[in-house]
Image 1: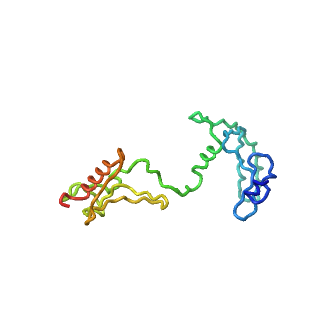
Image 2 (image 1 turned 120 degrees about the vertical axis):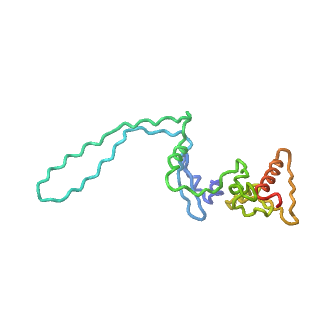
Image 3 (image 1 turned 135 degrees about the horizontal axis):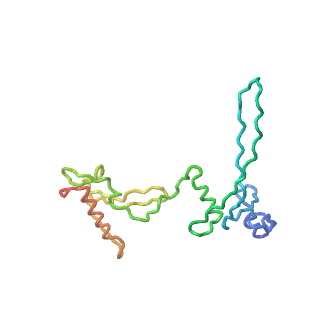
Length: 209
C-alpha cells in the first residue's frame, strides 16, 4: 500500500487482483484508469478452424405484375478447412508482437520518420558535388556548383539530428584566413580528408584559380 501511495498517491494498486498484467494508468491529474495488459512476447499460436465463406447479398429485381418464379433457397455456406501457415523460413518461432507488426506494416499511411537514416557509410565526393561534365575551358568540372572558383568546397556532411537536417561541411579557403589544419590520431581519416580536399578543389577550380 505504501508503494502504491508513493507512486499513484492512493493505495488502489495494493487492491489489484493477482492476475498478470493488472495495473493502473495515471496521466496528469486525471482519475486512475484500470487496465489489464496483454502478454505479447510469447509465441504466436495460430488458431486453426473452419473458414466460412461470406453469404452473397440479395439481388434487386424489377417490379412487375406478372407471375414471378420463386427464388431458390440459398445454399448452405461451404466450409473449407483452413490450412496451417507455412512455418517461418528461418525456423524460429514468431512472437505475438512480431506477427502483429508484420500484419500492420503496410496498413495505413506511413508514419513520420523521426530520425534520418544512419550515416553508416561515409558519403563519397560524387555525392557531395553536383554531376560532372566536360567544359571547354575548365575541363572535367562540376555543373551548377555555386562555389566554383571561390575556393569553397565540400568535404563532408554535418549531421543535425535535433533539427532533422544534414548540411554540407564546406571548407572556405578564400581571403586572409584561407588556411587548413587537420589533426587526428592514427587511422582517423586524416589522409582521406586531404585527398577529398584536393580532389574537390581540382574538380571545381582551374589551375590558375
